[in-house]
Amino acid sequence: MPDRYDPAVIEPKWRERWLADRLYHAPDDDPRPKWYALTMFPYPSGDLHTGHWYAMAPSDAAARYRRMQGYNVLFPMGFDAFGLPAENAAIKRGIDPKAWTYANIDRMRGQLRMMGASFDWDREIITSDPEYYKWTQWWFLKFYEKGLAYRAEAAANWCPGCQTVLANEQVIDGRCERSDDIVERRRAAQVRRHRLARAHQGHADELDRAVGRRNAPLPGRCGGHR
Image 1 (tube, rainbow, N blue to C red):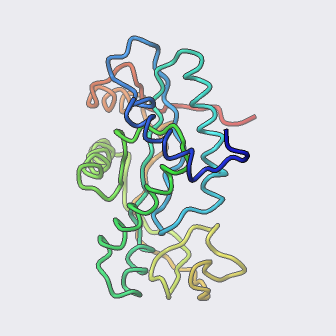
Image 2: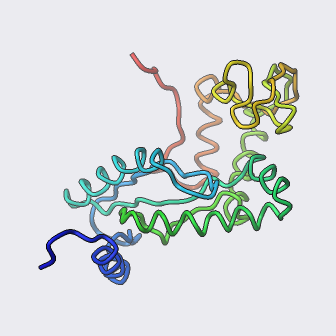
């Protein structure tokens, strides 16, 4: 037995064993009760950092705990790959945004696998894949058809350097957290949606029927945190 733990020697062997045994795969026809575990999908900026694992380690522990309780746990991983930051980074480097994004995904996928987390990689999602976003577009059209989505002007934070709007959390002391440009307040046309809690329950019922999954109802009224 070695005198010290050497992850570079020991861990690759077991990662390959887990992959070959499909240890973390969640079959649809498994008779065990189902449990869906979801953690955040990282933005493919090029490298993972401690903050990613800080968020994912508790989710991984929870997924493992449910497996130990006898559940068929679906614990997917994916990449939240849409956004102007990817385009701006690609422009800055003079390369195609798709090439930049998918190269980063390949790198981060390898880093995530090295962590040894219990993700079901057969369920990987990349939000910039047409096979994925066609469904988000489908959802939007259903909201629009039922009057739950509309277009309106509203005040927004505008970064002249990134040429995009920013969330309040991305504005630090009046400047963009990415480019350090001074942020402007502008009115901009935005697509917005009504809260389902304010919509007629019939709309939610119709959307539920459109999806065809009565056992997975849409979010409805919530009393909020107390």
